[in-house]
Image (cartoon, rainbow, N blue to C red; front, side):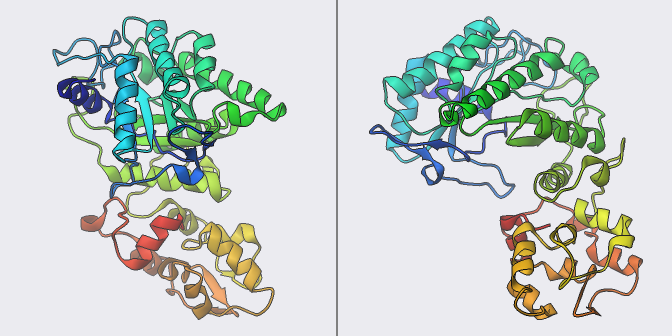
Length: 414
């Protein structure tokens, strides 16, 4: 059984990795323990949106690498620990039986060598599936430069894998994480994407990474703009088929002269998540959201900012505009846009009908007409003033705000 001291060290070391949402798996319970099939993964979220439903733990925080932003890097004199595969497995089963968790997020520092670390991780997930008959959700963090044979084998036992890019450019990687390079991170992601496609052709895709791959980028530790970050994100979605790209605001957990002294704050991270949503579900491109070399505005969400930069597309008539145009209206989410296109087939929609469809009217009213009537502010400066967040209220969106804002957060309406 793992000791309390070791458990504290290994869970504390894992808390900065945010790429661990537990969704998208199709692994069913076939007579064992746990269930990773859709509703079988329970979700619990902190007010800032992070998923806490999984046991998030490191196999080891002993690291041979010296990434300057990492609290587990080789040089600091901090408590170190290593868990055995047996200890991790017993802990997962014990926590599951106590109803603490529904799954596992397992990562590790690079202990001794990439291959040695990957072998420990592989033994752990294989043991959970075959000896403990655990069918719950497992997200495994891949180890760069590890043998791809072990990586592919591990992918048969887990639901999701992630290789964290961490920094958006090769230049920043060389400066802050000298033992890593772009190819060591992208190469295994590319190989897993290709392998998953081959399994899909054989109609066995549920056996190989059913929940796909994710990655994470640290925001603010290096000088890249939001525009650069979003272009990389767009490329990862298009070329690697990633399920999610996660963003983690830089926090100065270790002192280093090359790194910023102060945390970036969560508002920039939140704006990137909003922009990411536009890339994935609203048909926007990175060039439209944030021009090259520019950051996202902090006082406006990315969709409102785009709409104000492109007044030639507005207002749109709710009863005639195509779906693509409705999706670009601030305050109209994907679900609301589809509801509008269906409902207007039977009757012309008025302004009051949109509220019942959960359109966020305090934003949408400035960019639409209903039956030819406009309900918004009279000029652009007035619209900007109504949409901009006051400096003292410029904070990350909470699930516990006013009703309209809370609904928008839950449904992804922008």
